[in-house]
Length: 305
Image (tube, rainbow, N blue to C red; front, side, top):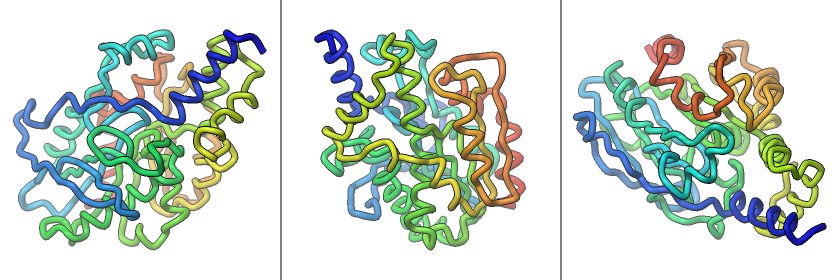
């Protein structure tokens, strides 16, 4: 292997294994929403940071998390160094999640949005590694536990809005801690992705196709976790709540068969898969809710009413 290829694989493995933190650059105050800065422990004690947006008089709550490398506020991909990292795949534009919370709040939901471990302002855990949902699953459980202990949400009907890594983490949590989801009414899960699939596509874009095994060995050296243990396709078999998946069909960073397999593996008969057409940018999938929220709002309304 050439020194140049070795350096490339080292850089990809390091970034995947220890994703650099991005800042929480936005606030619900920007759109005039009342909110609390909140902190609560993950299931294993890692301190998590978030926002709670109250909807006075509501008995319905949506808990939101985020993709890998993002925060509850989104990702400033219009700024460096994030722009250079993502622009080549057509994703060099900002994702701001605050409008999502405004839409949910205006629809009558309390909203709890939080940073996963090793992201945003939340604490470090497991040596700072990303585990594709294995350990982040504990954060999903911590958020549910916190919501059930708040006086204003302990009796609320709960829906989950789990994006990308957050979706995989939710599938993993449903596998590891099924009892934690007692009473959870539904899940909206944008763009979960299998690590092996997205890394294979990234290597192909960098003219490094055929180096997936070499990359996996480096990731295992960083994290101790190979691709086989990072399998939202398998975790999907343990999803027991009504689930709405959506995905950019021609996403240049993944393969439509990945989400299709997750959908097929979900045993619930109450499930839906929505394809976003006309773009190859993965970020368009993250912005779909604020652009065309009706299908997702209908899902929450159906199961949280």
